[in-house]
Amino acid sequence: MAITDILSAKDIESALSSCQADDSFNYKSFFSMVGLSSKSTDQIRKVFAILDRDKSGFIEEDELQMFLKNFSSDARALTSVETKAFLAAGDTDGDGKIGVEEFQSLVKA
Image (tube, rainbow, N blue to C red):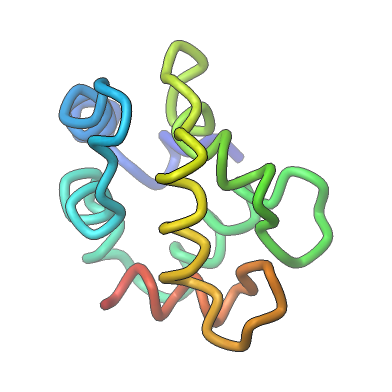
């Protein structure tokens, strides 16, 4: 399954253009702009499965750093500061990674 099966390519392009500069990524704005915030629980779970590259059931720090590349291969990697802030926002149980329920809560926040 491709991310564009769930989200609009136009919305993805717009969201990516809003965070091209280093340290400009804001997950709340991104989720809203890309249309993920308004998707169903099942659709959010499908996006999580795409983001979970190693299929571990979690999105780890290295996968978060490459978060934007899941939406476009031309997108930049998140900076270390952005990655750590994103992880801190999503990792509510303190295990150093984001599970599917944590991801759903982060998207809907």
